[in-house]
Length: 111
Image 1 (cartoon, one colour):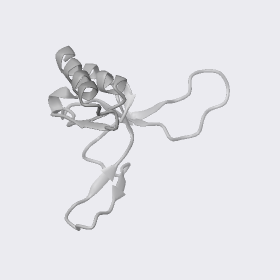
Image 2 (cartoon, rainbow, N blue to C red; image 1 turned 180 degrees about the vertical axis):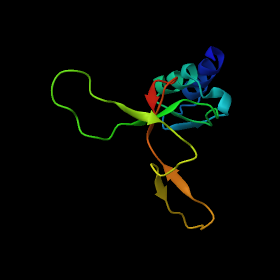
Image 3 (tube, rainbow, N blue to C red; image 1 turned 30 degrees about the horizontal axis):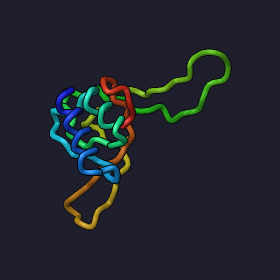
Image 4 (spheres, helix red, strand yellow; image 1 turned 135 degrees about the vertical axis):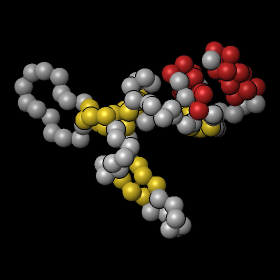
C-alpha cells in the first residue's frame, strides 16, 4: 500500500489537485494504511468494504453521571435488520438508500 499512497501523493502534487475532496477506489484499497494516507492528503476515500467488516453502531443514548468511561458503542451491525438506519428517498422508486454513521473497528474511525 505504501507504493499506492506514494503514487496518489505524487499525482495530487504534480497536477495541483488540491481542490479534490474524494478519491474513489477499488475495495482492495479500503484498508487502514491507504485510508490514513488519503486523509493525510486531506482526501476522503470512497470504496467498498469487505462483506465481513466489523462495524459497530455509535451509542446515541444519555451519558451516565459519575466516574468511569462513557458508553461509546451500541452493538455490532446486523445487515439483515436495517431498522436503525435512516431511509433516504430518491426520485426513482426502485432505488432506496440507507444512511448511518458507523464505527469501523479495523480502520479505527467513524464512517
